[in-house]
Structure formats: structure tokens, C-alpha cells
Length: 214
Ligand code: AMP
Image (cartoon, rainbow, N blue to C red; front, side, top):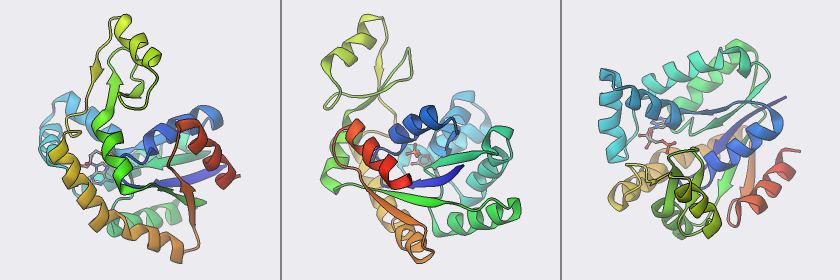
């Protein structure tokens, strides 16, 4: 049983590590960013509104993400644990989550803080791409050339997220520092915080993450 929050700046590797952990432990990665992007792709009015906010790098409202999360946590596959990725992102969301999990009688085991130097984040974010065929996350600076070729040779495209342009990235990092970083202290005070050194290769970080949750 593992109920954890992955906390960290955009580009700290939350999504990448959550996917590895999901595959290994058979518990769902719950990413509010992914769910919002799905809504955007669906082209609903709600999706259009969310897209306008996401394109600036600002946060969508606490009420909206809480609605998405409470529905998702009630799905049967979340009964045996979950990895929250990109939620909570504000103090209010953390309080709401605590209340929700209290009601469900399933408290968090830990908040894992993915700790990485600020200057590394820019390169991770500007270089980030997704293979249009497989959905695999890649990075033009860090992935092996063979991995990048594997996608393009198969006819895939390396797609950049719309909010991974320099202007939006700068704002996302600022939003993180002002609204989300305080949650590190929030979870430390509740004795839930565990810090993972998130600098280095995907496999090295994952090994450290496993040691931390063991
Ligand atoms: P992410 O993929 O986690 O970087 O999220 C992409 C964008 O979705 C963010 O920049 C926000 O605009 C929005 N978003 C994702 N998760 C949240 C959240 N918990 N609260 C508010 N906005 C969010």
C-alpha cells in the first residue's frame, strides 16, 4: 500500500518517476496536468477555459482541480494506493486533500519532495518532447540519440507541450515558487516529508526514490 504525493517544480521529474513507480507497483499515477490536458483535447467549453489558463502557466482554480481529484480518487483502481503528480499545488489544495482523505479513511503515507537545482529545470523543460506515436517522454538534451531516432524512424513526431516555451516556463517556475514550494514546509510540519535528490539520470533518481519510500 502506497499513498503518496510527488512534490516538486515543473521539470523536477515527477511525471517520469510516477510512471516508473506505477509500472513497478501497479498503482495509478494521478496527474491533474494530464487530466486537464485530456479535457483540453476533448475541446469542451471547460477544456477551452482551462487551456487559456494553462497556456499562461498560471494555475486553474482550486475548486476545479479538487473536483477532478475527488472523482478520480473514488475510482476502484485508487483503492490500493496512488501517486499524486502535480496535485496539491496550493495550500488550499493540500488542506482539501487532507480533508478528502480523512473522509475516505485513507491518509497519505508521504509527500516526496523531488529536489533539483533551479538551473537544471530550464533545460529539462525546454528540451522536453513527447513521441506522438508512443506517448513516451523524451528530452532532446538528455535522451540517447537512439531513443529519439526510434520515435522519428517509426514515423513519429517529437511534440513539444504548448506550455513548454520559455516565456510560459518562466511564469510556471515563478508560480511554483510562490504557491507550491510552501507545501514543502506544510508536509514537513506534518512529519510526512521525504526528500529525494532529483538531479541526475532517470534511473539514478528512481533508485534514490525507491530507497526513500522503502
Ligand atoms: P503539469 O502537467 O503538472 O505541469 O500541469 C500543467 C498545467 O496544468 C499547470 O501549469 C496548471 O495550469 C494546470 N494544473 C495542473 N495541476 C494543477 C493543480 N493541481 N492546480 C492548478 N492547476 C493545475
